[in-house]
Length: 107
Ligand SMILES: [Zn+2]
Image (cartoon, rainbow, N blue to C red; front, side, top):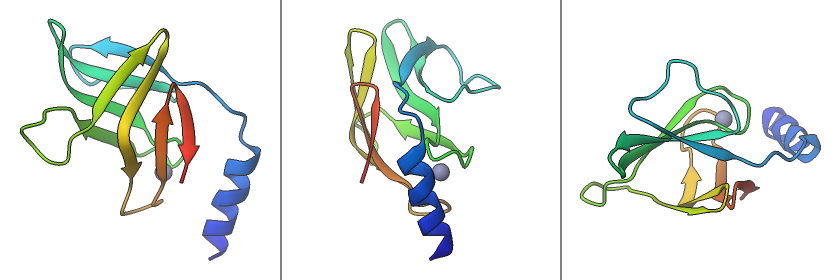
């Protein structure tokens, strides 16, 4: 309960940052917060990787291949990236959010 309240307060006061994206061949050793990595090559990307936006520093892997469930779709508009559906961690920090046009929208 206290932890949830604390997370809520942190989220409330966190400066809003827009996420950018980067194409990579492989998952980088060091991930930057505020960046969504599209892993793949030759215009085909099978995974997105990002640090959990709550600050817990967990690495989130989202499958982009529709042969496997669950999978996400990404959309690039200008310098922004959107992922759908929402990202819902069922363990740890239990963050649940949408990434829409580079913006984290908490659920
Ligand atoms: Zn987290």
